[in-house]
Image 1 (cartoon, rainbow, N blue to C red):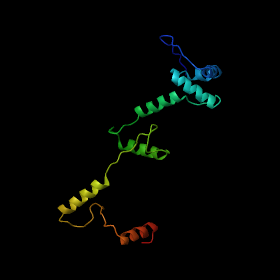
Image 2: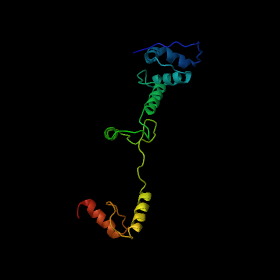
Image 3: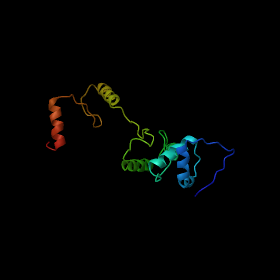
Image 4: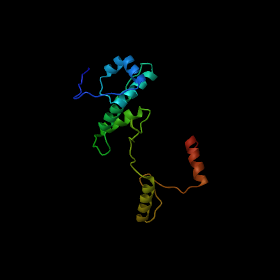
Length: 160
């Protein structure tokens, strides 16, 4: 679907000679996009067309706008979601090559727990429970030792 947008006022566009030649050579590709380009955007698109011998896909300015709209319309931290929506998002993120960032490089995940704070809380609970060294909900912090490292290595290899 193409639309034509007319400018409210005529704008003067100053192009270098090569820009004018590229504009003339790639007029059809530029008209097919039908986008409102600033002079800088147009020169950038013309350069892309020249670099790709006219086989360019999306003008850089359009790519920037699409990335921006994708981020603005995305689910943001703090948005309330149903458990099924969360599961679907995680499954879809698993299929992407850059699952931890958006198109702009912004993070798509947030830490749920800080291990240092968790260990402090477990230690505090241990003191409240009379200092027992029992497991608390399956969590226990072991003292680092060679024996413990050997035990973990054997466990990882499936020898224990």
